[in-house]
Length: 76
Image: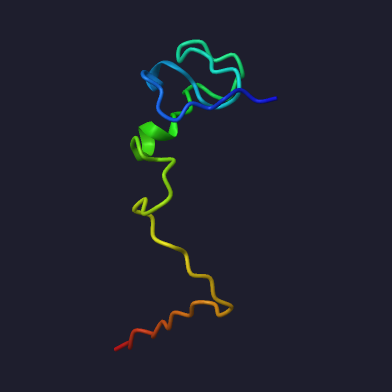
């Protein structure tokens, strides 16, 4: 069973949030790279887990492909 994921930890910069090990930022045991994974509160603010406007535009998917018309430069 996975550990409880804290909503707003007091010092999120001290921990890597990439897996359930929650390693210290200077001792990454899972080998997920040379940098730690940031907590969502560091990226999106303290209200990251509250549904609402996060400042991200919605992606509108359509069946039509976007077509850009390119005209040739006249020579001469």
